[in-house]
Length: 118
Image (cartoon, rainbow, N blue to C red; front, side):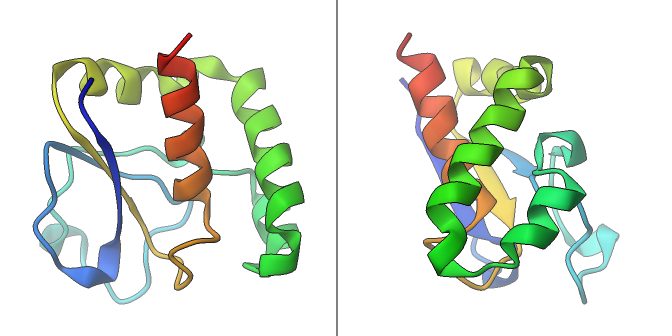
């Protein structure tokens, strides 16, 4: 099983495999032509309402993760590009949040890993 890697878009480290931006909003200060990605999956990101409610507040992360997983479960088709790419090789999920432990890419990676094991 190939790995699903998460990486902050501002780290400028080389990404492995197929690379997707998984934010609903384009990262501030990053020009589209400077970001090497295979796709921008806005629809896989949390809804605007959920994203704004969370506000990157760590104390809300557990509930955010639960609500986000529920959104993903309601729309499993948005995961298809990620699942297809993961069957072929490593996948890197790019995100722009400052907190590497409390963001949607962490939840998305864990959700994808859980779905793959079924």
